[in-house]
Amino acid sequence: MAIDGRKEFFTDNLDISFSGTPSWDRQVAMELARMIEIWPLSGDHWKVVDFVRDYYLKYTYGPSVYKISRGTGFRLQHLFELFPCKNGIRWGAYLIAGLPFPCGKDDSEPNGQVLSKPR
Image (tube, rainbow, N blue to C red; front, top):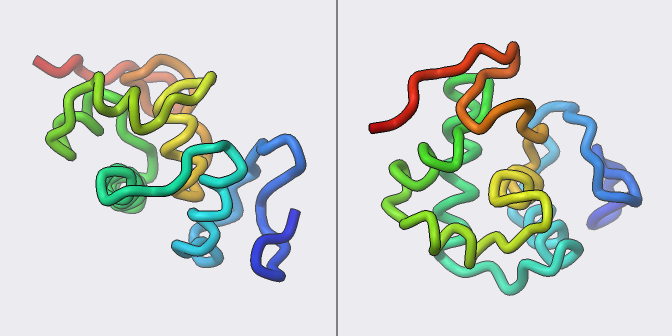
């Protein structure tokens, strides 16, 4: 699939094969949001997307829903309202942020090691 004339890491069924973040920008994010019907993007959406991207770039894996909640200051219910995706909040937020989809349990690193639960 091409967005804004660029062939990217997207396929027709919205699966993502992560190829790095340099080709991602806010235009790509807006097109992805339209495709999964999370539109228009509000300031709260951008706060989540920016948090998820910053976290991923710092730790090389994405945050759990609870970390997104704590990091943005949004209650879980508000996150569910912002990203009403059939595959979950992280699926929608990660897709729009141009990041690889989360794997495993909600609080696990890519290798499956479970992190400590938030208090």
